[in-house]
Structures are given as C-alpha cells and as structure tokens.
Amino acid sequence: MKKKIIGILLLLILIAPVVLTYNWLQYQKSVVRKETKKRIIEGLDKDELVLLKFSIVSAQRELKWKHSKEFEYKKQMYDVVEKKIEGDSIYYWCWWDHEETKLEKQLEQLVADALGLDQQNRLKQKQLVNYFKLLFCPSGFEHQESIVQISENYFGSQSVIYVAPLWPPPTPPPVLIKQFEMS
Image (cartoon, helix red, strand yellow):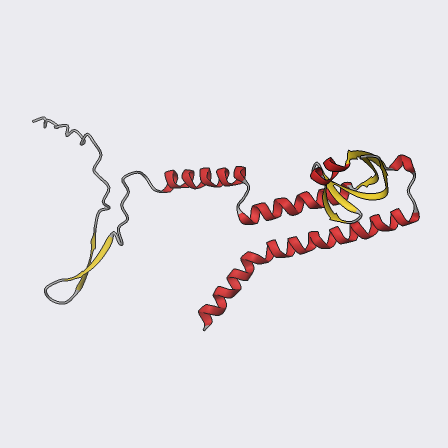
C-alpha cells in the first residue's frame, strides 16, 4: 500500500509542473481576452486597428476561428472590432492581440515539450543520451553483478574474493624488461 502511494505521489510530482503551467497560461489567456473585450467596448481608434481584406473563400480557408469575434491568421491572434462585406470581399477591422499570440505560442510549446513532439528537442535528448552512453559505458562492457564474491571455505568461515571485471586485457600485453644484476 505504501509503495502505491509513493508511486502515485511521484507520478503527480512529474505531471504537476506541466498541468499547473498549462492552467496558468489558460488563466492568463482568459484575463487578456477580458481586457481586450473591455478595450473594444470602450472604443478603439481606427488607427489602432489592423485592416485585413479577404475574399470570402480565402477567409473560410485561411482563418482559424476561436469564436465569433476572434480568429488566428498566420499564427497571430486577432479580435474582430468591425466587419464589412462588399461583393465577394470581406473586410475585418481587427485588434492585433500580441499578448494572446504570445500566450498561444507558449501553450503550443508547452504541449509539444510535454508530448515530445518537438523534433529539435528530441534530437538534443538523443545526442545527450548517446554522449552519456559513451562516457559511462565503454564499448565491449558487459555488466557483472558483483566484482566481489563472498565464499565459504572448507571450515565454514567466509572469505572475500576479488573477481576481475570482464573487460579484455590491454593489447598488446605489457613487455617485460629484464634487469641485470651487477655482481
């Protein structure tokens, strides 16, 4: 029972930063939306707005609507203040929402990091793992349970025996130099 509780706590500790950051960014996004709505209601000058012109077909294809007064276009968020249709063209006077764009990018990056979707980050992690493998696990290394064995001798007492690792001896073997005695 204790191990299950510890396991659950460790899992929560690993997941909590991502979940809390995601919720915090969502909260900030809602605050920015409320502030933007308040500014639009109070009235904005036309020179503060961005005019975007689309054909009706391209607007349907290129704009990713969040709700009736907000859309994403070229990875930027816009809040619609005024809309006008003339023939087959549609004009949007929009508030370019830089703050919400920034928050949206942070959310996307957080989700990509959490799910391991970022290719550049994945490549860096793989390179780091390979580096540590080379650093700590030399080629030809075979794991051995213990390099010290405890054995019992004939009389029942224990003795400690050193067992050499399974690494091959250095090649070529060392050369023995004979020393001559002087008499």
